[in-house]
Image (tube, rainbow over the protein chains, first blue to last red):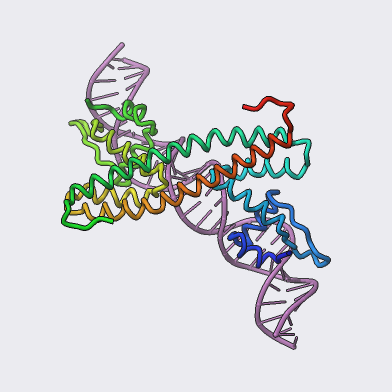
Length: 124
Length: 124
DNA sequence: GTAATACTTAGAGTTTACTCTAAGTCAAAA
DNA sequence: TTTTGACTTAGAGTAAACTCTAAGTATTAC
């Protein structure tokens, strides 16, 4: 399957602007047809979804760019990419733990408020 | 215990600029001495730490401001504050789950790279 | 044959949350 | 007495990651 930028935009949930921006920034490589029109493939979809996972974990565009560059070069950059991922993982684990703690704090706060307000309201 | 802005800045890990900015935005109320100098208390510290937890969970300044305003008004705004917290909690739980999934994805990626690179390198 | 969709470059605008500068005043500590 | 640390207003600057506009061209679908 291949997709136009309009179709692809809906599939991956990124605007056409953003897709062109990501391409310009070197985050994706996209094939073109005879008329220079972008042809997105399922491979592109997997790649973008992978990037979005990295983005979800708070990776900066700068790092994603570096990762993509290395990916485009080929197998000889695997160690670099692995090092980048491992290094990033450390930060994500910390962030995850911090979020867990803050969520706990939030739950405590909510419990406190519910107790203060008494049992005159049903809680959900 | 009370603290000057300089001391307090170090304790809570926010710059003096940011502390003044937060005060101007209505996120904190700070007492002053006879010379108009800010006097931070342990109560201020607890409040800031609480705000930082909310910030950690991705709450916007706008929402923190609203929360703080209601807090300054008093007990009659408890329901509003509880509603805000509960509503925010929903988003945080979603975000947390997304982060968990993306971390899992990252781990899979790392495993993949480690397998590809073979067992010639010790992994940690 | 016209509307929809795509393409280009180049640069401007947006949002959030700070972060800093300037320019001047004031009070306490060494 | 001079350095240090505090204060004020008002506004400018920064960074990231988009997001959009303009202005013009080209191709495809109905």
